[in-house]
Length: 67
Image (tube, one colour):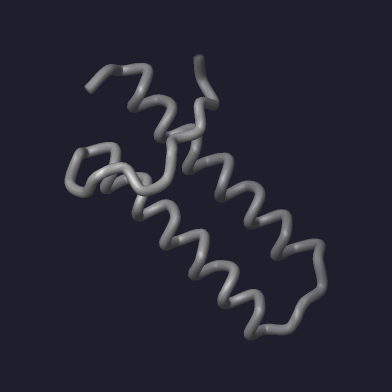
C-alpha cells in the first residue's frame, strides 16, 4: 500500500462526493431517483474501499486522480 494510492483513494471519495452534491443540488429529479443515485454512489465507494484494502478482488478499476 503506497501513500500515493491512499491519497488517490481519498481524492476519489472527495470527487465522487462533490459531483454527487452538485447533482443533488442543481438537477431536479424525483426523490426516489435521487435516493437510488445516492445509494449507487455509496455502493461504488464501498467497493472501491474494499478493493483498496484487498478485502475483495478487483471488480471496478480504480480511477487515477493523483498521478
